[in-house]
Image (cartoon, rainbow, N blue to C red; front, side):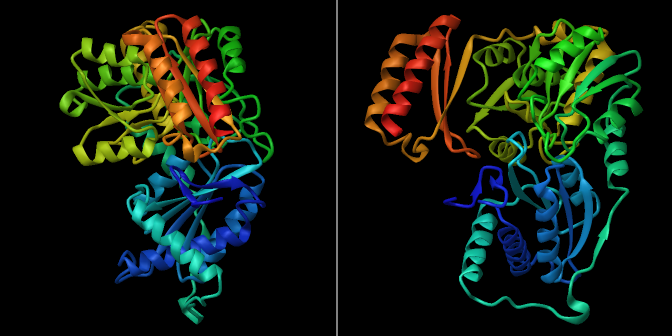
Length: 452
């Protein structure tokens, strides 16, 4: 797998790349590294462990819990909950560590491990590097220092976690959702129980699809990566709009009442204006990535809101927000971070805040989202190539230069290796969709030729 930790934890095919032995070893390593860093000093350490519904999450959860307990960490097992719920509970319960087992929007055979530090924040890069180094050291034979007797960790189920998380979500809404009919696509994932409960408590009338996880059907033809079912359901049920999550519910995309997609850039734009009205948009600034549509940038300029752009990945958005004290940031893919109420992207919270804006203004989501005009953007994922050579290939650099010359000032090109999958993403933006498709297709071919 190369370096184990990517931009969003450790991921791979469960029981092939990501094994029970690895999950156990990484958990023990994490406990030892955090102990060395002084995180556990003066008290008995506690960890919150959650997972999405993937079948492999059952044995990986058992391995993580065993590893932590064997290292002297008490474990609160919260079961199937969204990634942001595990992050929230890690902070709310004063835990020293949070662990989430999920591969997010990836297909069911994959799984992943993500660690949260005290407070529910993503673990620092240097700590991840240290965990990986310690894991490798002991995997190859160095013995662990193991507690015995009363020093071993204790394990218990924290069944009230879901209710506590839902209460938190509903409690931060600026207004209720009464009168709104909303379709929720839960991707047969981690939010299948808590998201409908939160929307219902907030006053919405809901219709759910993709809310029957069986361990095998997560993200299968549903959720934020497959919006067709949601589009049809919104029109069929004459709903005000629809909300789609991914497998671990840290993303939110939407569909307006006509069945048109509302992407993460548009959601950010709507929430930015709403937060500014409530004086909650600190420094009148929103943080997004270089993948954001040019139309989003133009809309924010027109509205007098400053846009700060980062590298692709919600962790980089979050780092910028925390460093500068900004309140709102996110990605076009639907990762939206509202830092006053969450330490990571939270798809359920995002959907609730979007619904609250619709209810507050009485305006359709389609109208609210029209604050920005999306310029045509084409994204092609090129698999099975050496993504490590994206920045060093002369052949690829020449192809990009030629594409940028053709587009001029009316468009842009972005090539980047995926942080979570073995592929290269080719993004082309242009004033004309046919031109964007043509240029993107040629660049995808160039990536295959240069890096294949």
